[in-house]
Image 1 (cartoon, rainbow, N blue to C red):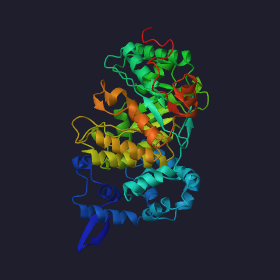
Image 2: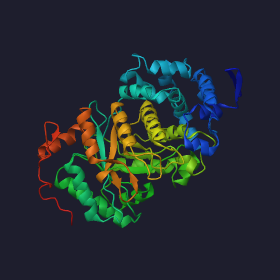
Image 3: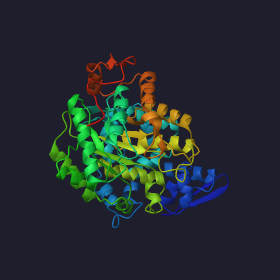
Image 4: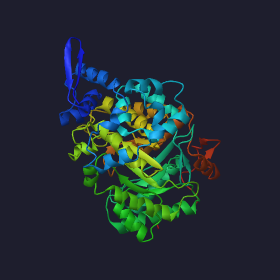
Length: 458
């Protein structure tokens, strides 16, 4: 359906909803690379004018990727909850934005609304919002999940402890693990990206993590961020798998590039639920996403990268996860060119994921060839904490020596907890105090650099 609008004496024509959504997006290098970005700021404003007047119902009638050829589109349409959608079904995208910013849109109403929203509706409204709007609404939303501890509670900030090692050396991993635990990190997950896909090495890491967890009676969950089919094999071999991980994207073709389908994810979800290893909850999936993932595999179908990102959240929502995070600057400057684009994308992803009912976290990060630096990451971590992000990722010194990119450090998590008066998951906080690592919510920085009996070797 062609849309026309006159603005400043000029008429702008948009061929379809896909064109409107792409042109309404804030400028980013990925959409320019794909040749779908607005050609100038005036066209961008015109697209937003058109988008603001579109009824939310329109997104149920015009699909961006055909239902017949894409299983993610079928998931979105087939799982739409008309009853949950009813309270906002009469609104335009612009009216929906105004309602989200109103007092009426509180945590309870937003939580009830989530099943009634499609990714395209959510992406559309985010394109009309300033950064402060994304933060204001994001802060109102709470998505609480649990496995061995509880994530997403008010006044809490979780952290993923990421002890990666370039050769998967068990002692090196253990040393980085100790470093993070002593600085109060790791309640969201002890999550390692293995350098190798070797099943045996992966199982060794999981057994090491589980031994340490049980030895110190830690209320935490671990995860080996290997391919989901590897994790299924490890489950079959009796490995102590807590969370199943997979990177996901917003189209069937992009997910196929990751070597997965919805059927594969369903198999993994059922397998981990049968293990029943959680103690306070049953959320046992961990997903990572990132703007540009679909474009990087030429599987974006001409849809802008931010909307494709939100479509990935529909995939995550189908398997109630403990954790979802956007690895916001990891894919590189070809998709998010500089600090400004990375910051905007991080705020968008958090807002959109939460609005769809997901427990959103973020890897506040950038690659060394991006036009960004640690000051940009400081800004984003502060803004996301103000927005109520569920968890953030931290690595030793903020420098991942295996993946070769820059993230946050364990000390950054301490800074955020101090500045914003937020604390780790309650079960983990109690453990820190029991181990004399914290006192009344504050880390005891003068303690010896060790846990009693902790060893890095076997």
